[in-house]
Length: 222
Image 1: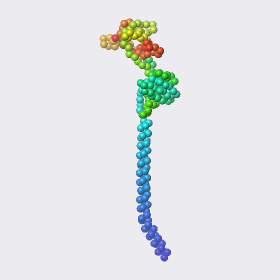
Image 2: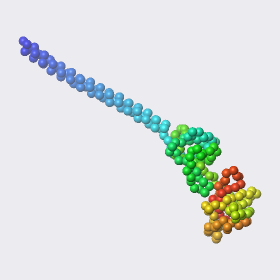
Image 3: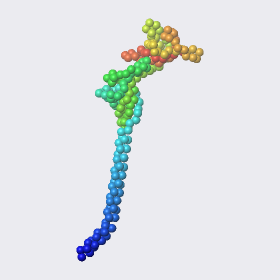
Image 4: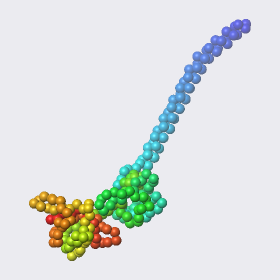
């Protein structure tokens, strides 16, 4: 009798396992599929968020020129034709000065002054007016003149030019590039060859604290 009951129980267990095991497998597979789908949705959301963050923080390389309106600790407020931008600097920002002879000297941030004309190269965050500066260079404006030589001072290496009814004084430096137009060709000349009443075209850089004195950069005697 005991053997018969044991045999019955064994058959019953096998019978039940035939139906319960596939169901368990199907349930496990369903759970795994739902879990995978959920993870895919989560990954997709993460990608969209990351893409949006990248879009908002995207920066472009820019080069701008303007006048310093305000100086703070590591920050500049730059005026560009009436529009203001904030310029961030750090220890890697290079600050330099372009001299009247167009050479470049290294500066420190503290050497910058309000109203300085500067060129800034860096990265601007899209949708903002903030530039992270890589390079800041003070720019010396270059002005063109055309007129006749009124007088020449061979001791001071200066000459006076009349343009319309105005007089301007120019310093002739070692780096001044001077040419003379001879038979449709340009010939290099020295300061001593500049004479009164000559007609001259030239590019010059203004000097500080003077509206009528300039440094001659390049001149052509016509």
